[in-house]
Length: 448
Ligand code: ACO
Image (cartoon, rainbow, N blue to C red):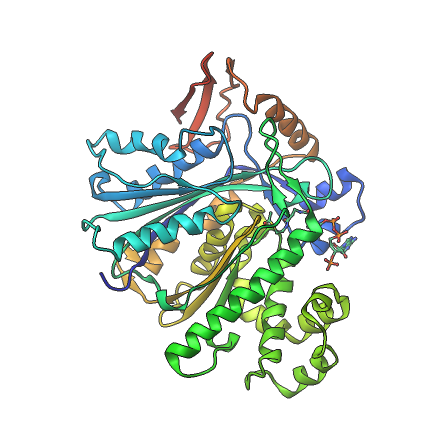
């Protein structure tokens, strides 16, 4: 199979959101802390009628319907998620209901999990399958689904929720340049979920930021080396038309792009202009440890990379800023943002992706883009995702109500024997929702 990659995409996020500006006032923090400090605009969240299972059912059903895909044509289904509802039964098995109806139970794949990286692991599994000897000619399907919620405190505004589905096959408009993958994996305690009675992670926010940037450096280094070995010339960020980052919050994305430019400076890339060289020169001799701590370097590199950020990164930030951290779905929501913003001019371009999951696992990889053919064309993908309409249709909830919802969900997490409000007034037609959980913890869903 040639040009294996993403043929089609769909995205779902809950219709409820809280504005970061209102959350700043509610939390009593200084004005601008979440909107400028973190760079976030609003945050989606699940109410008691939605969860990662319902969102994944909604998005898979929607993708199959919108692209007119026969469920029998799916041969592999992989889910990435870090939101634990069951420690054994995979979310994938829930999704099988959709395929059983058509008589298709011959579908490989289960769930992958390691923080925000599970979606990338799921995507690689599907792509590798299509490129392998065991491929039977059918499509792969990848689902990233997460609800990111944090305990009260500085991490809470970095939550979010969404599910994304991606159809995988040959001759894709978004195809992998498989030769250039660079990974960095290590053991750290930066963000983890050891308390099985709570949905909230234990997080060392500062450490997670440094780990993210170290992983970025390491992946970029391997990625560049592989590119240079293959192409016989140096890689710099000018060889990427867009750079898409896993986005826990936008500020980290701004810092990350600047970090890549600093790497290009250290690698002595000819693409780094004279003015930038002068501004970055004082930081050339820093040890890598010092470079992660230097506020001055952070500021100087962001300043010199500002114009490049505006053209190569800013168009990827729409959904992550509006919906928040969607964990496994965050990186692919950023990809969806460029397709939404730039589908008319993407053909022939290269998109570099950086996936990060705490703990930690990370990979940098790249896509080559072409128009594609209907229904798998960039234009059709943009039309079907209909991002503007979905964002506009959302309902802004006051912070007080958001906090009450999270309180209720704390009680519901791991609980049995309850019935939900079944209030579906905000859900659009075709959305799955949770109706009740019985005395044996079995969950029941319905479709609006
Ligand atoms: N106006 C403008 N900016 C402000 C204001 C203000 N009023 N107040 C603060 N800021 C800035 C700070 O200067 C800082 O910016 P900087 O990083 O450029 O210096 C930023 O806002 C954040 O403020 P801090 O006080 O440094 O950090 P805080 O205690 O609020 O915590 C953190 C932020 C660590 C990101 C926290 O939200 C967190 O732990 N989140 C979860 C962990 C996470 O997302 N990690 C990322 C990778 S791992 C993953 O994906 C889960």
